[in-house]
Length: 326
Image 1: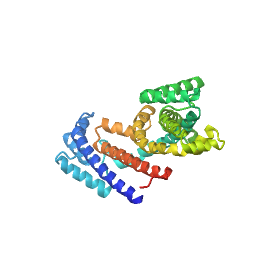
Image 2 (image 1 turned 45 degrees about the vertical axis):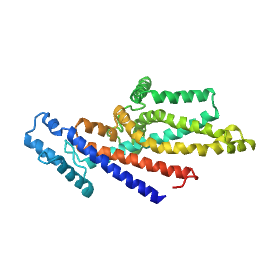
Image 3 (image 1 turned 180 degrees about the vertical axis):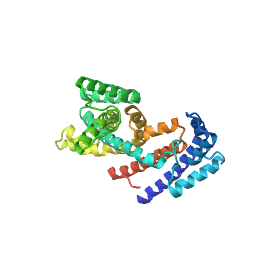
Image 4 (image 1 turned 90 degrees about the horizontal axis):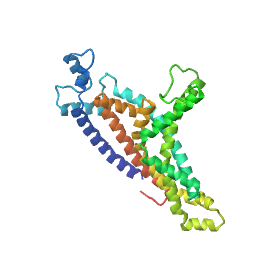
C-alpha cells in the first residue's frame, strides 16, 4: 500500500509542478502589476516601478523564461514564493491566511459529515415518511440553490436575530474581535465569530452526505446479510445501523476526500461574504491586485489540497472496505 501511495504522490507532484508552472506563465502574461502601480497616487516614477517589479521577481529587462527560472530556483532552493505589489512576503502572508481558513473549514467539514451521515441513516430508516421526504427535499433544494445567495440569506437571518435580541449575539463578519483579553473573553468572542459561518457551511454541505448515505443504505437493505440479521429478530432500523451502515459508509468515505477541494473553492464565497481573511479571500485579492506570486502560490496550494484529497480517498477506501487491496 505504501508503495502504491508513494507512486500516486509522485504522479501528483509532477501534475502540481506542471499546473503551477503554467499558472505562472499565464499570470505573468495576463497581469500587469506595473500598470497597477502607475495608477497609484502619487504616481511613482518608472524607476520606482521597475525596482518594485525586480523585488517581485518580475524584472522587465528579463524574458518570461528567465523570470520563471529565477522564480523556480527561489522556490526549490529557498522556499521563497516571492513578494507582492505592496512588498508583502508571500510566505508570511500564506502562513497567516491558511490557518484562518483551515480552522474554519475543518470544523465545518466535521459537523457536515456527522450531521449528514446521521440524517442519511434517519432518512433510510423512515423511507418515504414525512421525515425522509422533508430531509431529502431540503438536500435537493440545496443542490440547485446558488451558494452565494444561500450564504447571504443565512447572514441576513442572523442579522435579524441580533436585531430582535437587541445585541450582537453572533457576529456575521470577521474572524475575531479587536483588543479582546482574557481566556474566557477570547473564547466567547471566537464562538460568536465562528458560529454563523460554521452553521452556514454545515447546513449547506451536509446535503451531499445525507443523500449518498440514504441511497446506499437503501441499496443494502435487501441484501442477504441484512435479511439474515432481520430474521434473527432485529428491527429494520437495528439491521441498518448494525450491519448495512458500514458497507454504505464506503462511498461516503470516498466522498469526504473528493469534497475537500470543493470545500476550499466554496470557501471563497464563505470568506468573502463573512469577511474572513483566509486563503479564499487572499486569492480573490491577489487576482484583483494582479499579484503574480500570490496567485501562483494559492494555485499551488489548491493543487496540493486536491492531490491530498485523491490520495486520502484511496486510503479511506482501503480502511473501511477490507475487500479492497492495493
